[in-house]
Image (tube, rainbow, N blue to C red; front, side, top):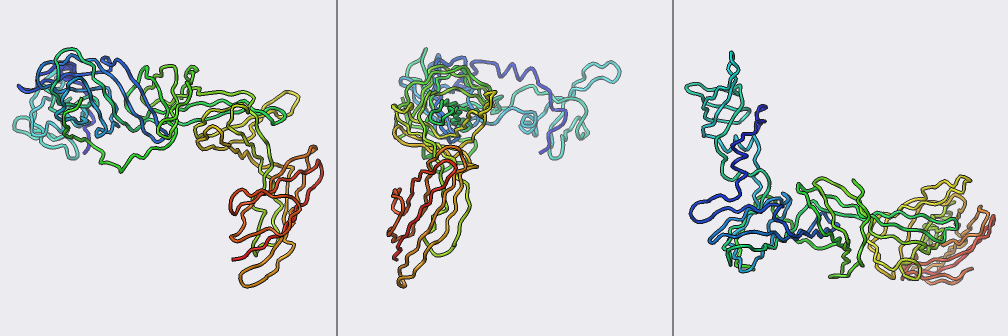
Length: 478
């Protein structure tokens, strides 16, 4: 369907009709509009999964008898099947999300077969001339009948004397209700909506000895809905929720039984509360989130967090027949932090990216970006490990020293791993790898740690400008 290029007119009569606060809808019901101006409270609970829970209270003056509530200033991404409406004694007959919005194209579509006006300028005086026209078709353009002639895309501008039923200037939640009691009431509204999401972003500054860092967490909030949320109390839920099967998207009506990137100012965070196996972060200050806006808000900060730096090798351990020599490989530079109060943290950390900065070592005191890595949701007492990149001066290679077939179902093999350190200070190195099923160590030059059933690691000290050699022999029986 092609919209007529001149359908930009805004008929004043439509605005006047839409601005009425209370309109009769026949003898049985009357429409009562509730806008954001009726709002008394607003709570936004935002999830990581493009999902938000809107909880608000709006003040209304209910008339006696059946009433159609038109709840405006709601997002078009609302999931209407999730709506909960409650007021003392309120009985809900039906409710729906009205998403048939008033546009020039929809206005013409709703006028098919009807008579509209075409306003043209008089060729000599320039005064408006009004002609009545019946809309015949919109396929490929506007086709109208004016008197005894048919015109295609007639010059002038269309005008309308009334608003077709069902068209609205913005999405609205419609609820046909019987009030429990007429007069002033508070209506509680809860619903889920798409278009709201949040994530955590961290920045960390490592000290010169790489033993401590200062950590700051920022919340990045995104409002991809078509609604503004002003002065909302904000709650952030860390952890995924099962949302059930996807439902049909579009206007939905359902019957119900009776029922009762700008940077924001710093916001203090109350203590994260565990709820239903998830953590809920509540911000102390109200937040305003405009449609289409992405906003960052400080969530938490911690100073002098103790970290452990290690150089780590993965992929050197090969306790199976095959490759005779591996490497040389550069060590991965890893920072490990333990989420405990005595080490400077002790608060649940939501999943996000941690970007680490550190001193460059220059006389000017310049800062270097050292690398970034993601963490999962990290509760108190757990560890987080950040792989920032590769270390230039710490390398290792592995070579097979023995392979002996003992039977059809068992063999013994061994490796020598040589780790070199070109730095001017000693370093701690971890050599880790996966063992086959049915393994048992026969010999080793350094004690190992068994990280899991088939995962093993060795921690080695490598002197400055020197090397350390690890040897081991393993038997594998299937």
